[in-house]
Structures are given as C-alpha cells and as structure tokens.
Length: 95
Image (cartoon, rainbow, N blue to C red; front, side, top):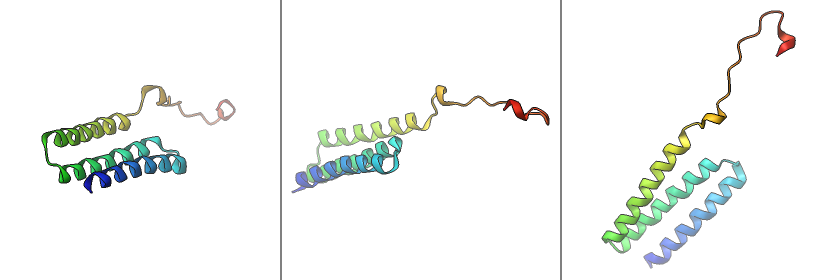
C-alpha cells in the first residue's frame, strides 16, 4: 500500500515539474517543486518501511535538494549585467 503511494507521489512530482516548466517557464522553480515532492515520497517510504536504506535515501534527497537550491540561488557570472555610467544631459543620443 505504501509502496504504491510512494510511486504515485513520485509520478506526480515529475508531472508537477513538467507542468511548472510549461506553464511558467521557470526551470529553477520546477526543480524545487520536484525535489520537494521527492522528499515527501521518501518520507512516505520511511513510514512504510523504517530502515537504514530508506533513511539514507531520504537524507540523500534532502542533501541534493539543499545543494541544488544553493546552486540555483547564485547568479552565474556570465549573466551579471555591466552597469553603464549615467548619461550627461547632452549624451542621450549615445545610450
């Protein structure tokens, strides 16, 4: 019973991630949604079969989520815009 519920939550996590990407275009948000729902599936697995392997897989998913959230929160150096100095009163044709 719990195994089937875990499979359903895992499948819904992937569907929710795809729907998030298609509806918003935000890949970062989709990754976060998928990982949060995979954490829920891992915790459901722990309810059904409390053991070291289930605990290790849940801990690995939580660690992966934290690492990816930290990596996605940083701005890559190539996307930083160079700030231009402000134009003088007669330099508007240069902008």
